[in-house]
Image 1 (cartoon, rainbow, N blue to C red):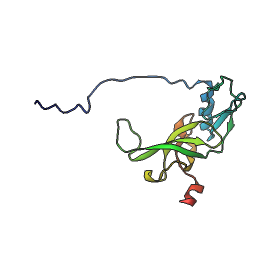
Image 2 (image 1 turned 45 degrees about the vertical axis):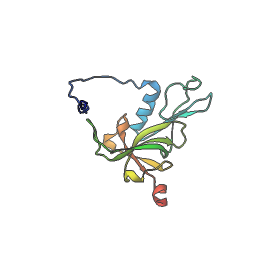
Image 3 (image 1 turned 60 degrees about the vertical axis):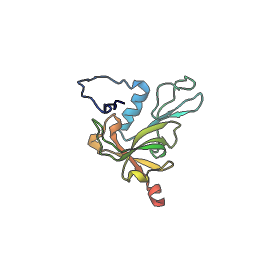
Image 4 (image 1 turned 180 degrees about the vertical axis):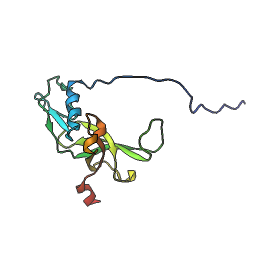
Length: 158
């Protein structure tokens, strides 16, 4: 019997792709809010689903969403993963946690990193709050939030 060769674990490639992401009218409102340290939500007047970040139209009933309003900013970790290995282009050094956070007052989730705690302390149901970048670094981008951290209420119960 002939031994199988070692599996290929990586290849070098000059592949490069440029792309442009268009946030659209609805999500642009959310992004502009981040530049002011606001998490802006919008509610559907038809089915009353609250989105953050919000598209222009409800994904359930296709009704145009109402005016934006700020949420308090706290949220609950609904699910998460621990990033344990490095990959090309990585900004943070593993290990670290990335979570789907349901902001309080919204029916949708936002994905972001969890900081100011060890990754093995992150858990579903954890209450978190945003940590914003310095005033001069604020922009209409998700990077205006450095990460979410356990809220002061969560820390008091730890």
